[in-house]
Length: 310
Length: 278
Image (tube, rainbow over the protein chains, first blue to last red):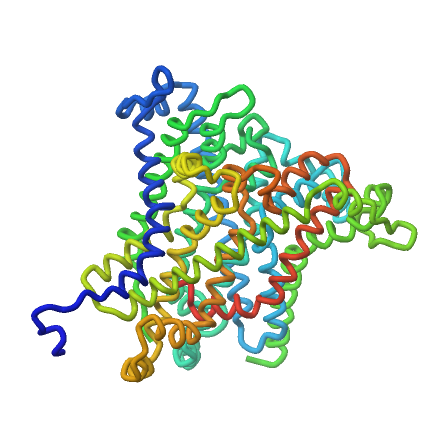
């Protein structure tokens, strides 16, 4: 182009005008606070409300002081369990539903799709409370229904028991969000060209074996994206725990995950005073956990997944 | 495959899907029907539909008298609409610049803006609160609008720049020959042509904003700026023993979201199946 050979190109101000608002808001409200938080974790409150640089001392406290490290590791392992349940229950159910939905000439597919997605649009406040009521031994909906199918003896106040509360909450969250993997996988399945499936049918590969041998390998990249979205979502989850069990993540901290731990550390609760610097420290650790997960996916898994272009 | 095996397979598929649909909707249905029953009926026969004897709207009266729900609803509406407007406008402008012009640092800029898709903004909360306190914005709508705009931008830029690339060059060049400025080209040609993509991004951005509890709790917990999500959370906590009121409040909170969803669900599903979020 002749313009690019000109000795001096006029500054194209309109590019700056188009980019500036997004860049300013995004940088000022998202990027700077993110690094500001990482930075705050290196300080502590000194005498007379001054800010003192302490290096990595906050991290030493978090990992070394038994009062802190106990709570931190408890939240981390709980969070990991929360994530594992999502991976083992939510995503396989989502894939199965999508596979059924995408079968050709299925009637009412649009209705099923719309209906199964409804819980995903409700807020955690609604979902948390709805299940709190249903599982409440006071109301008796869950025990009555289990009685009706002969499982009445199996009922227990699941949300109130240390051993089962976290798993129950994870399953509630699965119930809420199963529509999202279902939709994404459904879209991926629809994008497989008919020729590929017809060719498979010519070779006698139909039904279930067609799913395992043809479709599943083709949708692996989508499953990868869903896994990393689940990971990021689970490791900064907070709302459901707060709504269903309160900031103390009871009973006896058995449902505490990193999000609720961050909230308590930062804001304080009841007798515990809030501490912005320890809060920033927890947030920094969460940042590195999420960063590690995302990098592992981007460099370790995504590059190895084979993508097919049609 | 024989016809009989086909029928068997399709009825199995329907059975599974119906079972799962019931699992997904029944809990919500249960809350809605019980919100219209008297306290005794709620406990005596929770699974029954309200009849003429058990029909009672006392819960709704309590909610409407005690809670400032209309104000909360208005707050949620202001925050959601304003954040959506800014995220879409700024996002579309940036997406247009990235898709339309070649300049040094274009790719880097795109990556920088996409970073926020993976890193949750909540991790910056400590510094965001300090900043809002310093700027005197705590307990204002602006605190939430700024945060949600920033949070919505990465996905908006990412999706919209894909669509901006598909806007025909001939159309834009014809406009340039006619002497239209770049700004006019953006507002009168590019923006109207990506309207379907704008709607998709709007739905994706709107749901998390409307449902968020974290930032209203931290940045705007005051009575005047409470959002519907935070307001109902606090109401439910206070009235936890008043079952009529709790069930009615839940029903009122479910209703607007589901209606909106049913209106926009085609847009949402079309957006997903078109691969907008891949």
